Length: 351
Image (tube, rainbow, N blue to C red; front, side, top):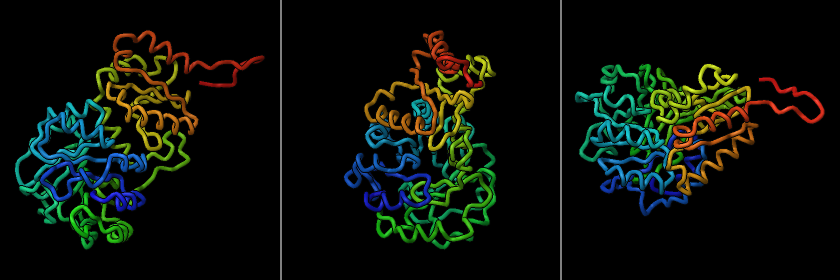
């Protein structure tokens, strides 16, 4: 994504993710083309994906904070350890692989929300070339994947022939460009509106850069408030990789131990709540240190406001509070879930 005006046009289409290239050798390198302030105006429901190739972890984090990224696509030979470190800091992780060679998927599975299968090249993507899609049958893993590599406007029919239980979406790029970094909005719009949908077999409609129609959960479902299908997949993976503080708090509140039932990593509207009690309309968030960064703090405040507009209460604790002051944490939670009788009579609030 290399043009701010086009970026905002694409944001109005049915995309789940927009990708921003942070690989300096790429003609789509985002720096100098799109400012961080441009990204802040994108819909919060749209994942902002930073694409990095064999970059230092510190540089990745620096750019992720500066550009308000929530998802990191690692498109080189990054290690499982790097995926683990970045995942623990709150980012969603997409790891790219070349299916024409042997891959140790199991080493990456605990730390990745998605795999991405792309055409191998020294340029690390953007070649406009396909690989042999029959190789997808080799993949037997549990992590959902995105299909990438040379997908063009005429591929809808062929894509629909792919049946794989873990196929979650497609990534389109160079075949939908006027020039590197400048997307053809009309071509993309026509592609995603052409019935039937190119996605068949998998669990959703997710894309990096510009993609598929979204399928929404019933908007009146009071448990999830219209959460998108992709959030349910992300929440499922998040449950497998809790932080130490999240895991510790879950052990204290799971199984109706406080008299009400909480769910963990629960999709609500455009967000995933760390913990949610439907009867008490209460969300509990456990925050790491990066939530103190001004841009993230502002995002958290906006998110809390939107959730409160839905009639939900949000309370937050730091990792340190959960790990070292759990008694007071539980006391605060109990205060929030205990009905307060109105003046002059008994409460009609039921838990």
